[in-house]
Image 1: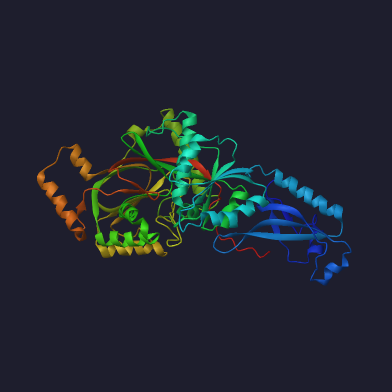
Image 2: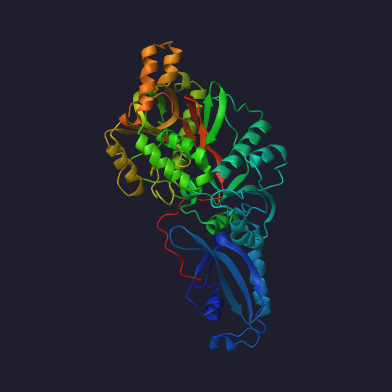
Length: 513
């Protein structure tokens, strides 16, 4: 049968496995078999005397997925024995035919390797942990080792991508962002969609993206798989998993600035990434140094946030229900969003122009919009533990001006199980669109350029410890710096697909080996 038919030592159909395996019963879903191959048993010594009863034993090996601790997958082998060559070949043929019917599995992939990201181990990780699995699964690859920034994006615009079943990036979140921008941009160009139009309906690509983590934080991989382990990610690609994910588009004055899938952060996280760019010579330590410096500076920024609440979603940022494999919230939210869009199209519901936007003004230490939990090894829960990957919305987190001590308490809660939103100076909303304009831009637009205000800004920048307003920060857009003080952000439901299935919940490690 197609899909989840198990090879089980407990079934009547394969009772011979129980007789000749002499091991604990185990089940292997066909969907998680990597490959099957005949095993050469001639000349081998069998430690168990039970095998000596077979005059001419025959065997085949099933290469499959084995679940380990903390959401990791391992490559495992299970060997099955029988005394009849014909029966052995029949099982080999049957299993191979079943694997051929799994049409979601990739056969030809384009692989980009960033040799400089993280600790510079991308090429080594691919060759040691990924390439052997692709070879075993009969996946062919075209490999490009990148030599400069944006090479992957430029390549995807230029080459014929129709011959591939997916794109794999070996590197960190920056490498994934390059591939994301190249694939989305190429797809929109082919479909005749103007990406610069803020209200453009973007066309999803038919290709999936695989992430082999080899960066510093690997936030996207951690939030979609549950671990930043290269072997686990490679196995998700091999078995052909598919996970739809939202993408946000960031515009300024009808010009597309960037796409984002994880964090869009202004203030604290924007200042960190901006400062760290000047200290690349420090390596990965630059993030800790810039983080400490930004925390001690304690700048806050004045501006206006306007947002449209995501009425179509079935969850909320504080409901304690994280996004997991087969997520009901993502599935149901997408259905309700599509119904909402249909009603608006036929005039049965308010169009975007007349929808009820909410406005929040004030001084903020940080403004964060998260499309996913943004979990990583240091922060297992992430910036918003209940954010969902494919519900067509983002969690908008506003951290208002507060004392340095209270802000530290807020940051510490990202590393434990306590509710980081349980502070009077923190607000969180689930939104489907939002806009931000800094006070500095508002003053310019209103022609309010009194000399006193200019002097006040200068004094504040000279005394950062007072937490008074500095004119502008920068945006941290998935680890890249955006300098625009006024942006418009929209969320495109399930625009891209990854070779992943989401984080599996409460699955015990497999006992078979």
